[in-house]
Image (cartoon, rainbow, N blue to C red):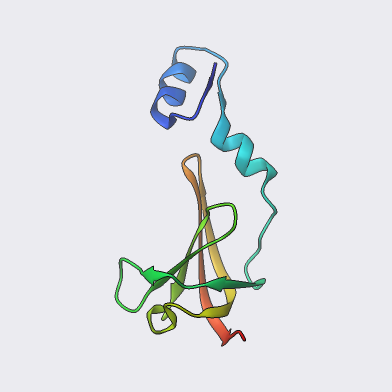
Length: 101
C-alpha cells in the first residue's frame, strides 16, 4: 500500500500490510542538515512561543527561529541548533547568526 496518511500507515502496518509512506520517501530524498550548519531564510511570521519567528525551506520544511520575531519580513542567516524528524515531516530549530543583505 502507498499512502500519505500517517494513521492509515500505522493501522496497515499493524495488520501486516507492506506500506510505503510517501512522506517517508520524500524525507529520505531531502538533503541532510546537521546542527551547526547555516542557512539563509526569510522569516515570514510569528512562532507559537514568544519571540519566535518562522521560515520555510524551499521544500516546505518549517524552520523555527529562536528570537526571530524581530526579523519578520527580513532575510537572515540562521544556524541550525536542532532537528526533529517524524513520519509527519521534519521540523528545524535555529537561531539568527546575522541579517542577510
